Image (tube, rainbow over all chains, first blue to last red; front, side):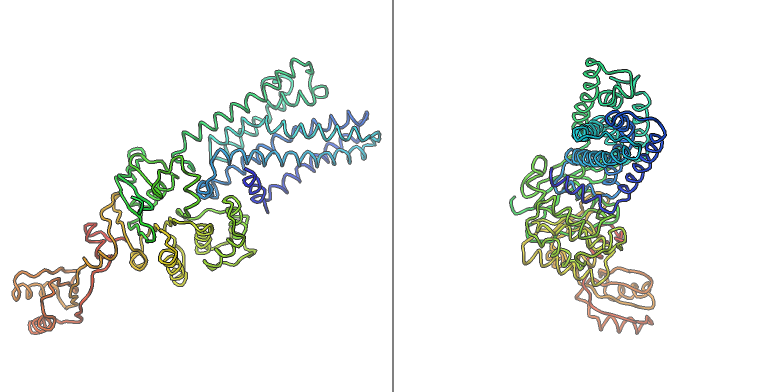
Length: 244
Length: 307
């Protein structure tokens, strides 16, 4: 599995996707910073939690579309038949790509930590302390890892429609949008809404009770387990024509 | 039997209502090159895919190294190198980088495996050219390099010389013969280029209309193949009449208006030349020939050529 993940990183060489993601992130950050500059700010903690909430809304699109791209690439490049002869199972390939996406999400959010600190300086929020920076990193790390779990339904759809980039990208977009727009209404129903409520509850929604958080946590974990099981069954059934 | 590296028994593949492979039984021996001959769409690639487990089997059995593939993939696959159809690689990476990915996944222990494999197929090591810019021939060479990199015992090559120039074809041919004869590898190679199979294969299997028509060693085939006398004349119709008048029943075949073959080797060429000329039939060429693989293929497929 480690060599699979290492090769996923190697496969990402010279891809424009990384640049596009960086560009989108910077654009988003610029917009939020511009807006934040013109509104009165409180302390650093509330600043980064609010900031993190907005950045976390961009994350599902990035994670989902990245996974769709790297999964379908194996079909588009016709590399599956070579990989299956190594042998690498489809199940191993699936999880190696999820782990790669997880790494990318963590990198994105860690870079955003730096950008948030920069934004705080620009917006004149000066009461930054070390323990707050540590909390910031922790929050963003949780957002990155949690968002990957919340995107498992999109990963499942991607597997089902193997080779159809347009359909999976569309599903990813609609799924992410629904989770973000309905962050309050869909808490406990939609994994993205549930995650945003757990992490940024006080800032972006009306929820925050412990019982609701438990429901939200279950709403994230259950689809992950279901996806893992369904994908395994799917690959077993489709084993006959594995790279079709 | 242990002597067979690949053994299939009544192998069948059906897609919906269409049969892609029908009850094929092939036997590939260690240290020999097995040529799978057939036209496009005959079923060669499907057979190879089933042997590799890339496509499910509708019915029949496959044994590789004496074992069934199912459940033994981790033990068997590392002993096989294969190219199926056009080789697939990552377009944003160079040839070397692509091979390094597969070497890493296979856990190839030899540090120079990639370099050596590229050297064999004539591709540069650490070249900056991306795979997306490769010509068809270069892509094919890279596929071969990937197949041989981990020193497998069995090579399964689906039309490996596609896109190669004549020198490249000769180099690959020499390399495959060396692998087989000197290093005892088994090679299953498919092609519709008869001349190459003729030069390369030790055993052949002829696939036609999804069935295996015949399986034979090239040695046996060459012994069986008939000699004949080829005549190029001004009119084969007139020449045939003259032959029948002179010899009665003699086995011959008319190729076209000017070419005919006489299979009866007891006939004296000089006598036949004389009677043709005496009876007004111009003789442009006469010589003794051996039946080629193409002739054999045409004969067993009922006159259908491979092209």
